Length: 199
Image (spheres, helix red, strand yellow):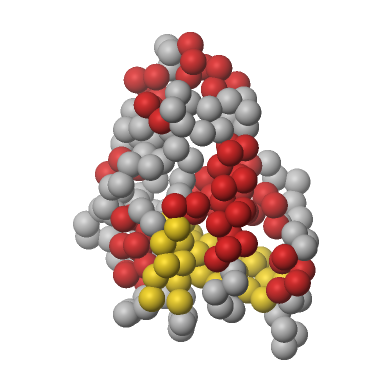
């Protein structure tokens, strides 16, 4: 296993918008104050992930003085004009109901579909894993679900993956070539990094 390749996917710590169940895909909110990390992810030469503030701040909480590479390709789905709105505010909107019927192909006005998210995130993932081994990626629920759906041998669909804030999924392959070929990981584990899950 000398050539083993490991990727850890971390969902950022929560924001006020998360707590109030708002769509905050590209909205650049900070994480909530008073949060504590109970677990650290050990040594890392470099961390990459979404360029949004909540991911950068999560990296600062989990790692000391670490180099962070932010990429817009690893952002959450863009919810367009529905950013900062809730289900309650949108439920009577016909376009919103159409979107709920097929997230994968339909997109919010001025936003993107899950198909577009998936394509963007996988491109950002492959660009990122050339940086180091092991790879640590701090990102959002949507991108993590997209990557788990692609690389974990499971019957779970996109929305069946539970990805709480502050959770870390570590995926292992025999070598980097298997990742580049899009093969499933050989094992994965989950760890919770936050003192208390708020959502």
